[in-house]
Length: 253
Image 1 (cartoon, rainbow, N blue to C red):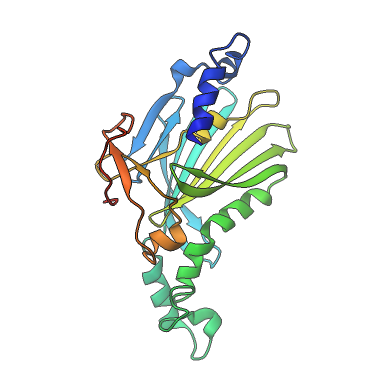
Image 2 (cartoon, one colour):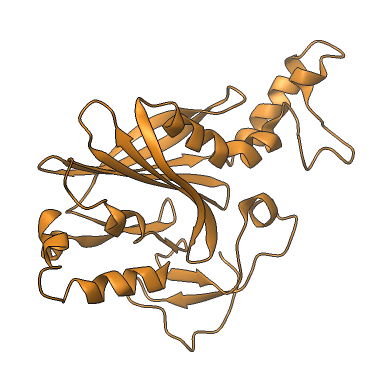
């Protein structure tokens, strides 16, 4: 993914191809935005608006979320961050309120299936989060033109491309999960514009101090976020700066 971004940058220096940036408002208007609270960094066309929201999960839990959004003309960019960190406690409460023997409500409090299902199906909800988010896009009044597995800074995710039926505008989405937070990026541009790949492909990760982190092996939230496997080592960089090649590996704080 980082090589893709580099190639896009090189292409935009070629005659005739600089219109890619111009069509999306000019690269000078884009700036790196970092959220220490939600652990990410991404390029936005100006400072985004931050709105408190909620997110309904596959198993019917209502979780806290924040939406970071920006508009420029007819272009719209947003990232929704959903915090799954409290869902296990919610699952325990649901389990206790379930009728005796109602396994589909109770889930698994103990035993070998607990890491898969969890109380009140809370752990299964974490595992299903990216698929459920992708399904929300698939349900739209739009034609899905691509749906692929991908990664950003070696954190796995899903990438979708859609053509909206109402006005033929183009939407590119990227869905990832990191440290039990769900990240749903969405960029939409009018028909005839280049797809908003510069937005989705700029996603990166930061620690609680705002330092950039980059994994040295593939991070999969179903394993590493749930601590069923050791978290891969990372390289760190100062806030807003590229990661140095010689930065020592360490775990995410």
